[in-house]
Image (cartoon, rainbow, N blue to C red):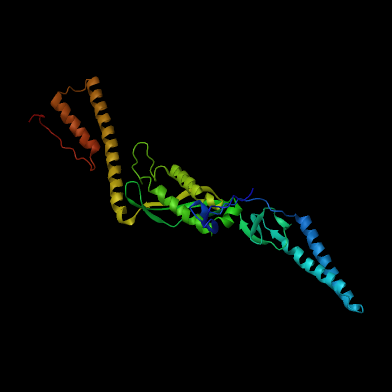
Length: 322
């Protein structure tokens, strides 16, 4: 894996100025690759070599100072050995599980070390630790308008981890902040694409299709943060409600819908019971009803079955026509 070609540069009089131009020219296109490194055994050998060089260099300097004439060759060799003993172990590092080390040598990206434990890499290199552990955060509660224009409050939990340490280190300024901002932007866009409730045919609502909406949020966040070398594992809606200014009105609408649905169910059951009662009365020849008596009985039964309050019967001792 290698870095891509340099972006196009602005030129003055045919000479490049070093300033990238265009949208593509502003990006750092670099991909993670393994860096040269030695494992625990190699790192231990490097440390042992460093000790030998330090002791040997010190010994040469002391021996040169003790001799008459103070020979410059021994002193030079001793100083060089001592400096080598100091510089050699600068590439030794300890990497914890769940961590990586991004190695640079005088600004140039050499690669990433993912081996855990004691390792040795290029001396005099700079090393930046990048965690690849799974992380999660909850977005701030956003106030947005849904697809119907109703203001709602929504928040989500995003689970993510660094997949490409080179992009996370060099492609963006701060990948933690980048993920948070892009997640909130994606959440806002998805929330504006769906109604809170009462979706039409073929449409998904935020409240009724939480799994589908969560998958859309995860996919959009992943698409936005791929430039930073970040992988989104999942996203879940953690808070969803109407904004306070319309919450009462929407509650009344939901209550009205529930009452209508309940009334419809009650009327459906009452009509079925009345129909069954009339059929049994006629089938068993208990009473013969003309159209007017039938209508009266249906009306009385529906009042009894569909009324909210308790019915008080009135006994008629005369004829129905009196």
